Amino acid sequence: MKRRVKALTVVLAICLITVFIRCQSDETPIQQLIVVVNGDSIEMVFVKGGTFMMGCTDEQGCDCEDNEKPARKESVSDFYIGKYEVTQRLWRAVMDTDSILPFNGGCGDCPMENVSWKNAQEFIGRLNAMTGKTFRLPTEAEWEYAARGGHKSKHYKYSGSNQVSEVAWHVGNSSGGQYGEAGTTRPVGLKKSNELGLYDMSGNVWEWCSDWYANYTSNSQTNPKGPQSGSRRVNRGGGWYNLARYCRSSIRNGNSPTDRYDFLGLRLAL
Image (tube, rainbow, N blue to C red; front, side):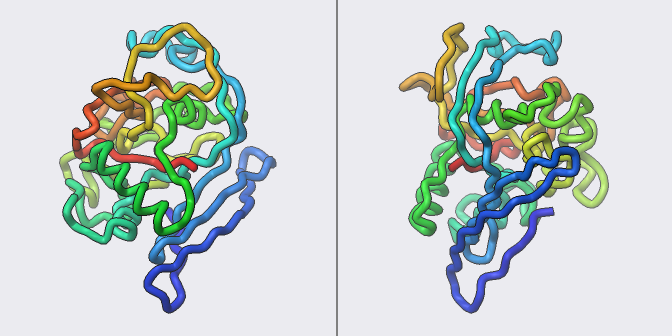
């Protein structure tokens, strides 16, 4: 579960901490950055840049959609990405408003959903004003590189495993129990992390990216940012209501920047 860091006798507490955590399966330390806002912590994991094959690669098998093709080599520079999806608690700490209510309300550790791409931009703008940082949405290439495990990738089909239920909340396991009989989101961090120590990159909620949505080309690029305009923005990762094939690391989708759904949220980059 996400760790909580309490603010000390102030309404707004912001701190910056760099920590190193050792993975159970890898002795290479994971470098994290923790920013505390109004008593809630944002945990960012450092991702060492590199070159990778993006799209319909061999381990994705026959589940690939046409919009994942062709697979091609892409390169990204170093960046930080959220260890978890943005939660309802963090959203309230920054926005301080109930003007947007998640469908699965009352679950502070669950991903914030029912937010459009434009809502996400407003959230990030307020967060940056509060912290003096430059948080943003990840590019689609950054997102997939991180989901695949970055330079530590073991080439899994899903983010962190070849078994979807080890790492993802999806239609096969998102109903029942204390969260209701109908499917819904679940608290972040309950499933196994991927090679970089990132949680819920597969399943739980789809995650907005910064790029305009478009079909892939065969051109290799460094730090691609997608087309300069369009009608839809990219979202990635699959959600709680999806079949396993839609929780793969290469799955992609596009929605209008004003669309809001109970399966669509966000993860921060820096």
